[in-house]
Image (tube, rainbow, N blue to C red; front, top):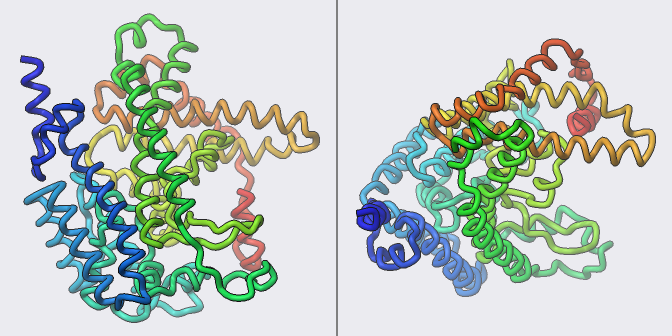
Length: 460
């Protein structure tokens, strides 16, 4: 009976069932098998797209059309009849160019929601606001001409990002399709001083290979660690009622570490797909190496070595953070941190665990900011103090993230409350006490010149 139940669960999908035998063989749900199959096919299509549909060989209209057709096929393969919802949403929004509220039933809807709202605000910046009212970044990305229907559909439904993202800017995408993307980035640097006599043609092959190796490693880690340390362990009777507090902290950290490689896998593979197609070039680093991280969704090294909650969030789901900053944080007049966390929860969907995570993240973020501003400068006078500070803040950050993000993977109310009760809601209480009683140093006055403001924001 158990085997029959598992088989029926793996078969449950609105998309194609042709890979059901493979799903049964691997013991992995069919929708996940379809997702990986589409991404691997997209990787192959990306190489073909870059080589045989190079901007020098094919017109932008041809590139737009084929990118859209492949994207539609992938969505239909993964989600079947449900893909109609996605197509209707995209077409409805083209007529009015407005934002939409979409539930998180499938990943493509989440990505399309980001793109629709991003493009809507960028068109608003280009057609509905004065240039002097825009920040430098808003001015750079402002869209001053309404996109054609083909450009619009290609931006939202192209095969590179329709399944797993990430979100990108409309002007960057159109520049890629038209063959201007890499040259635009190269012209931003003084390439002659770097030894180039003419504009080079960077190849993404090395970047793609590196990201595919990371993808494979992440997949292997997830398949092994998630079975040894499942999320259900956090509501196990031993964990909740018998383990001491320090053991609970340790196992919470280990379980949450085991849950991360699946995100590393999906996001890094999506990044590799874009790079294989020739999209994602960001320029040249200080050592003269070509960089292909314009669309990267995470920086694994900085995540695992983060010494502050802010640093962790800045390197996790980077493109979503950029989207939240674009559509909310920079535009709301009051409580930008709180409203940005709330929007993030609404965007993710209806599971209560999402709201536990993001509402917990508000006091934790405010408390971490207050501690950093009040005490960090005392530890910069010597290298030994700085190392000690970094070690302590690294451990604190990793535990704080594990505590905050646990409801995100547990999803339901009952296991979340059980977990937090077993840990005495300690981080909630500590964060609120810090916010209430630790003086928060005021930011620099907003009337300072823009360059000074930029330095201050980076320092914060």
